[in-house]
Image (cartoon, rainbow, N blue to C red; front, top):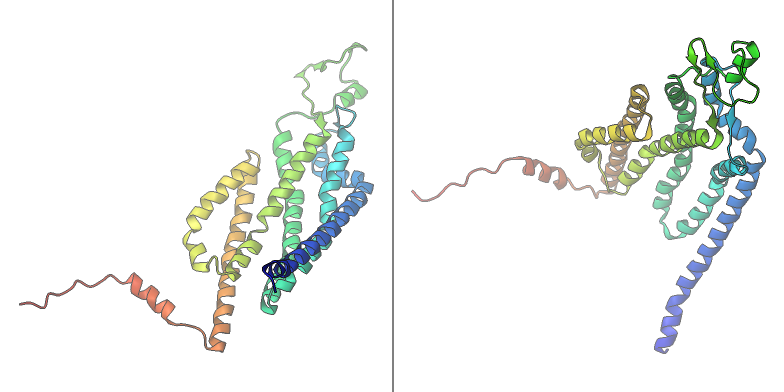
Length: 311
């Protein structure tokens, strides 16, 4: 066999893997496009659902008919398309994850498959839990903080009730009342949606912390002892994260800190369980080495001073 034939034979598996990767990517993209189309069909109800915290806050603050506006002809369409992209990916994620799994699984051992598969299932569930927490708890608090500084009673409601008299028909200024100038919230659709989506993405990703750290613990990259040793640094990092992704509201920041730090402690517990299970398996196979613990104990002991044998 010539050298050229050897090179050609060795490259055949690589070409087959690339062809399979192309097939998996094409199927994933097709699923993503179908998800976008399905999500666009119900994009308006989804938008109403996402903006419910803003509507509820405005009604609680006294606005009888909350209104959002868009200031360019294409803004509303692009807003619906943005929703379709996000929720289309969510709809297509099972197919995308399945294609990824079908591509990776043949190169894994059976034990690795059993270890990796639960994390593929847990990841979207934890993201959904974080997104739900953001929408139903965090976003209403943030909206109440942002909108609670101004009287958000509608100008048009004042006009209809007759509280403002003598307003010229050709004016576009904010009417002046006996109490002063009425400050009214006229929010844009895309900007209001942007705040909601940021909270959903931030908390959805934060809720991936136990999944990520547990997976790293299974791979031996982190340990429960190591995570516990950097607990104080983790607290500082979580506080900085809370200050960056939440509004300047102490209550919201404390909620985010409490939730994420609780997830960190949960991660330490899960990694410890992984280590105990690994130790039990190695002991059952007779492969557990006790010297590791003894070496750690010896490292902690201070070396005794050497004694000179000479008189």
